Amino acid sequence: MSQDIFGMPLFRGCNTDIAGAVLDASPARYAEYGKGDIIALQGYPCGAVYLLGEGSAYARMISEEGKEFTLDTLSAPETLASAFVFSSDRIFPVTIIASSDCSIWTVGRHALTRLLEEDKVILGNYLRIVSDHSMFLSRRLNEFALQTLSSRITGYIERNGPIENLQEAAFILGVARPSLSRAIAQLTSQGILEKRGNSYMKKG
Picture 1 (cartoon, helix red, strand yellow):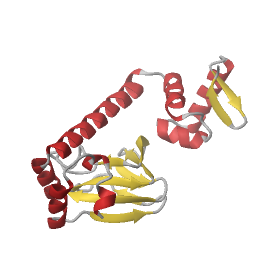
Picture 2 (cartoon, rainbow, N blue to C red):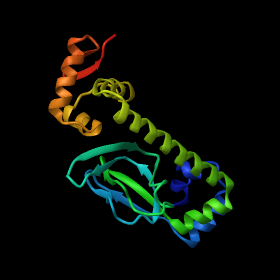
Picture 3 (cartoon, rainbow, N blue to C red):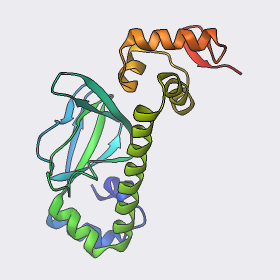
């Protein structure tokens, strides 16, 4: 267990003797998930931080009206729920779903607190992880509150490469597929995007 979990960003550069002693007292739980499995459910209690060791997952929010929105896509190695576990509500504001076969370590809140208290490297890693996630959420808010759909599409392509699956891209961008298709067609006619086979990419 130690070799795998100590390779995660949270433990990078830490004193493995100190961290190992904490984990021996409060062992981390290891689990494997298949594509489409629910890892955590929106609204349920969050009592641990989740360490994605292998595979990928995405975070999805569902409104009371049933509207779905993909907040983030995550690939190993990654830390999930870092900003939730110490929140006042201590619940998952999103549903986390495996988008491929994946493996996850969960470290309980009390064990995580001891790790942060006893190893300054782990504390620094954790603060950086939470800060990076906060910066990401700020960028996502900017995309949806201030940017047009056309800007979001070009930004998506810059970050993730060509759009090959319109349904998947629409899900991630939080729009209906017909709206995405119309916007892509307009960007293509304007010479901003070009189609190669079944993929859409930036021209040039």
